[in-house]
Length: 393
Image (cartoon, rainbow, N blue to C red; front, top):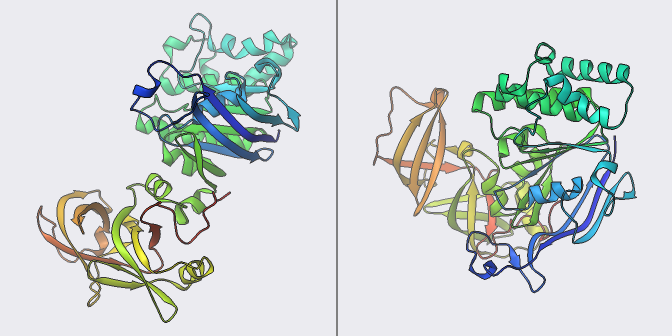
C-alpha cells in the first residue's frame, strides 16, 4: 500500500587491505571504497511486485537491505509514499522483511512467533488474535499454530515467516531469497502460494532472488543486476523478448541463449545475418529497429534461444554442428551441440522427430533459425544493436 522511489542510490563499502587482491568480484573499486551498488534508480508503483534478480554479489540483497534500513545508504535518496526515509529507523518505516533462513524464534510456538511484532506495537489482544488467525488461514498453517518451528518442514517454516510479516499489514513487504533453502518441488509450491498471497493482501512487494524462473513467474517487473549496476528493467516478457545486452540475454531463459560469431550484412537497405553457411534475412520489425539506430554492417554476435532453432531443411541456409550430448526430457530432446566453435543447446519437440531418429554422440547435425528470433549483439560491447545504449526502463 505504498509507492517506493529509489533515486541515485549508491552503496560504498570501505576499502580493506585485501580489496586489491580480491578476484571474485568485478565490483568497481574507487578511492572512496568498493561500490556494491551504483546509481540505482527505480520507481515502484503502489501494490506492484518488483523482483531484483542477478548472480551472487550483484548488489540485489544490499539494495533490499538499504530499503529495509539494515544498511546505510551511502548516496542517494529513498522515499516511501513520498517521504524521505534515509535517516528513518527500520521500525518506523512500516515495512516487513522475510529472510532466507526464516529467522523464527525457536522457543516460541507458531502463534507466538506471529503475534510477536503486534505485541511489540501494543496492539489489543482481540485484534492480534484476529490478524494471526486470518494470516494463518490465508497461508494454510492454522493446524500448526501451537507447534514450535522445529516440528515444521522447511516450507511450513517459510509460511510462518511470511505470516509473521503480513500480520503487521506493512506498506512494503521485502523478501530476501525466501525459497532458496527449499527443494525444487517445495519451491514450485511456494511460488504458487506467493502468487496467490499477493492477490489477497494489498501491499507492495520487493523480492530478491538469483533464480530467474522465480523472477519470471512472480514479478510484474524485473530488475536485472550485474556488479552493482542495473542492466535492464522490464516485464518478464520484455526482458525475454528484447534483452538489451548479452548478459541479460544469457541470464534470462532456461536453457540459456546460444551465441554464435557472425556478420551483419546490409544490401539494398535490407539487413541479414551470416552464421556459418546460413544467410538469414531479419524480420521487418528488426529491420526497422536497426535502421532507426543507423546500424552499419559489421562483425556481430548472433543470439538465438534453444527453443527457436529448427532442424527443418532449408537449402543453402543450414548451420553445421556436432552432437555432444542428447538428453530426453519427455516432451522434448535437449541436444547439446558444438557449432561454429561454440557450445550450445537445441530443443527439439519429440513430436517433430520422424521415426526413431536418435542423436548419438559425435553425430553431425544441421540447423537454422528464423529472422524474427535472431538477436544482434555488438561484438565489442555486447549491447543489443536493435536498441539504444540506455538501460531499458
